[in-house]
Each structure stands twice: as C-alpha cells, then as structure tokens.
Length: 213
Length: 213
DNA sequence: CGTATTGGATAGTTATACTCTCTAATATTG
DNA sequence: CAATATTAGAGAGTATAACTATCCAATACG
Image 1 (tube, helix red, strand yellow):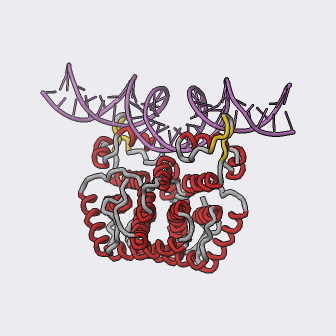
Image 2 (cartoon, chains in turn red, orange, cyan, green; image 1 turned 180 degrees about the vertical axis):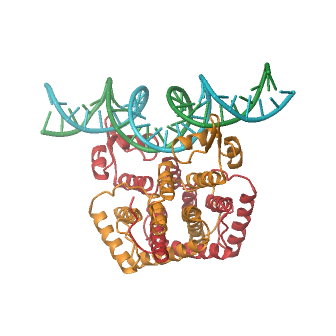
Image 3 (cartoon, helix red, strand yellow; image 1 turned 90 degrees about the horizontal axis):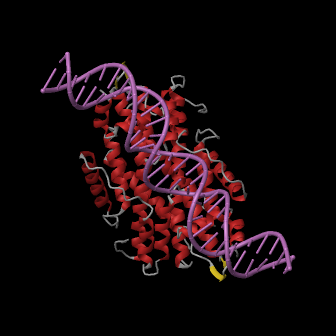
C-alpha cells in the first residue's frame, strides 16, 4: 500500500499521515526507493486507532504516542503491557495541595484498600480519582463512601465485560490495541449513557419536554 | 470583594479573571466607580465551577459558556434547565456517515427504546453514543446488545445516586450548578475507577507487578 | 519520455487559552 | 495631601496543539 492508498483507505489526508510519521505516531513504511514506501495493514489499523482515540476519545496526540510506544516496546511482558499503555492515557498533572486534596487522597486510599484491587499506588488513574474528589470537595460536594464504593462496583463490572470482548488468541499487539480502544470508547459510551440517564431522571422529577437551545 | 480578593480566594490570576469577564464566562461585578467593581460570593462559586469543569473535566471554555448561559437564562423553566445545560457539554460535531454509523444509530435506537428512557432523540449525548459505537465497529469491535444494556443500567444507577446528592431546597441556580459539577466530576470518577478496575482484572489474568514508564 | 506521485523537510495556519501591556481614573497610605 | 498602588477595560502578544501547504529532487508509470 502506498501513502495515497493508505490515505484513501483511512480517510486521513496524506499531509496528516506525514505529520503522524514525523511525530513518531505511525511507524515509517518500508522504503523501497527514494520516493516510495510501502505500508501494511498494520499501518492502517494503527492509523484508525490513532484517529479513534484522538477524535472520539479526545486523547491528545502526545499521550497517544505514549500509549503506542508502550505497545511497541517488545521489552514489556504481556502482563504489564496493558497497564503501562493505560497509564499513558492519563495526564501526570500534579494535584493541587490543600486540605481537600489530603482528604480526597485518604478517601481514595480507604476505598481502594477496602476493595482489594491489585492496582499500583502510583497509578495515574488514582491521581485522576483524587483530583475529581478534591474538586468536588472544594465545590462543597462530599460524596458519601457508599456511593463511591457502589461506583467502584459498577466500574469493575463494566471493566469485566469490556475485557471479555478481547480475543485471547489474537496476536499480542492486536490485543493491546483493542484493549486500549475498548477502554477509551466504552468510557465515551458510559458518559453518553450517563448523561441520557440524567436527562431521564430529570424528566421524572421535573416533567418532560425537549430541551432546546 | 474586589478582583484581587476574588483572585486570591480562587487561586485564579487576575489576568485570567479579566479574560473570563471579557469572554462572558463570568458576569461583570457591580461597578462602584470607574476603577472599582464589587464581586459577590456567587462570582466566586461560578469561578470555581469554571475551573473545575475546565481543569478536571477537560471541558473547553466555549462549551462552559454554553452551559452557564443556559443556567443564567431566566426564561428556561426548572424542568428543562438541567437538560439544556447538560446538552451544552457535548460537542455538536456531526458523525461521519457510513455503514458503521447507520448500524450504530440503529443499535442506539433499539437500546434506548427498549430502556424507555425519557430522552429527546436529538440529544447530543445520543450523538456521542452513536459516534462511540460506530468507531468501535470500524475497529472491528462489536459490542453485544446485552453488554450495552447492562452498561445502560449501570449508568442509570450511577445517575440516580448522583442526583440524590442534590439539595432540592437550594436556590434554582445553585442546584443546576451543582448538578453540572456532579455530572462532569462523577464521570471523571467513573473513568478513574474503570481504568483501575481494568488494571486489577489485567493483574488477575496476566500476573501482578507495577507498570513502570 | 514526460507527466504525476512520493518521501522528507520546512514553513505557515488555525484555534484555544491564556498573559502582558497600556491608560486614565481612583483608592490607599504615610 | 502627596506619593504610591490598584483597578477597569481594551488590545496586543504568547504558547501550545494539531494540522496544512509548499518545495524539491528522485522516482514511477503510462
């Protein structure tokens, strides 16, 4: 496949593909001469994944590169691969340090040790949880522990169903690529359903009618 | 409260507050002279909400303005307010039109009519759902209907618990502000828990160990 | 053989979210 | 009351992300 065919097959402009190549998001094709390179179906898959994460998942390209670098790192064993790749999805912006942050950290600590999940304490996802809880606290909203642990149960069940969608027999790289896509896109799915559920409940409480603009 | 005090109380630089004022995200303070304006605690609350949505929820300022404009629109009755405000959270980017999109639209249609939720068919959240499902389909991943409807149940239960946190006796504007904050921040909470749950399940399948970088 | 395409690099563009500077008027403080 | 600091409001400047366009020499293809 030449670059123009890759472009046509994916719907991504040639200029953008070249940009992704430059940025190391997409591996170079195999150059057959000074003006030709051949791209494989793996390139097409990779390109579609990049677009899915960027356009639908709102993941910045820099983090997508982190994810893909992890996937391409042959050194990482299969058991760490998914975790390492997932870790790249979250920003590493440090949380603001104040009372709310301290309390949120404690709440998260208690929740996770109560659940007994096997997660690394330095996981960026934990940082995200702490930041969300601290921010809620600063807005004067305290989430009761039982609501939080119910949320955790729901999230765990969702994750179980997600990972069941994976074909364990597929090649390692493909499994991880699919796992990443599933994680990000099912989060979008949840968010969409969550907002529609809010709308339904709000309709039940306050009456119906289509919100306009 | 003068602007410098508002800045100190919120941790947001004066220049940024002025920018928000210019952009219509924050209402002007009451001007008492040519060089003085007074800001109330409502301004502080509003400012904190803006930062929470922007920094933690990754909501672009343009959409935050849409949300706040809805909240400030006295015309809108309480029953439509939350929905209208929530609608502004989602982008209105039109979905790509192809077979995957058609199928995703049908799947969403079936799911929602089966659930019987009172949601407007033009809801942007439905667009988000369709885009996520279509993108999954393009990546060769088909979500079984029973997984989808289970996700919907989980999302609905989460939404119920969210809205129980609201104090129905509070003033109308505050209720909506809090509802928005809860929606966005609990989505972040779910995402964080979902990723940690994935890590837990992955550890169970592939063995443990802390993913490094 | 000549026109079109390609790889690779460099420069330019658009959008977002600030951040800085300026001015005249006013507030505060010694 | 004079010197210093602060403010509202507007405009311009900056940083970053994510493209998009242009160029050139070297092929590819009809």
